[in-house]
Length: 250
Image (cartoon, rainbow, N blue to C red; front, top):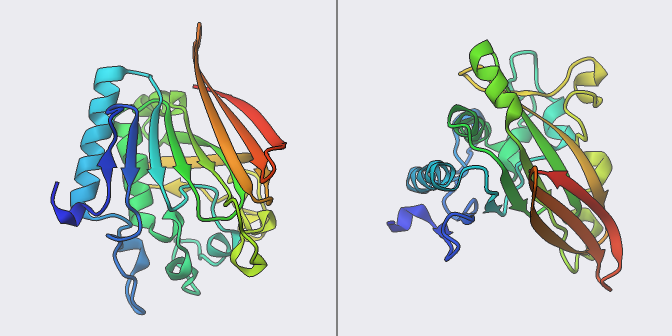
């Protein structure tokens, strides 16, 4: 892998874990440019990640695949979602200010296409940056009836962990700043939902839960069951006391 791939790399647990570098290789978004075309990772890094994900599915099947991303996949910022017109155009340039994948619409759409087209099962994104903790259940779909059944069967999650020490309120994301449910939240004034739609007609929705604004850390437990796999997300405060806990099927 050359330097243009940034600091992305695979771990010794080769098919279990991949770290995406969404910081040092992302494209700038200058004023006057179309933020929908900018990418959050370099082409070289995307190629490595795409190859890893497809190979992991081929070699390990439905075994969980963990992806570290400093930038959050979901949930979305309410402010960025609200100020779009009916065509999805960003009217007030909030997308350019958004540091998450939502601020790099093309990359987010490519990610949806990658997972659905290749039937990648049980992807768990591990993220930070929001200075809050939550888990989102990602739900895929497709405008192609033949592909939609496969898309609906895919399971994926985004686990966001807060910082151990986040003392500056202005830098911390509040839960009321986020879209909790793309199908039933008050996005677009409450009369429309915020669903990601790719050029290929594939979709991404999500629901958020297990959320808190407290500083702390998150413990993940992955267990193989008779029906598949099970993910437990255990959120603790800075003293180690349990704040939230939930279990998700994989």
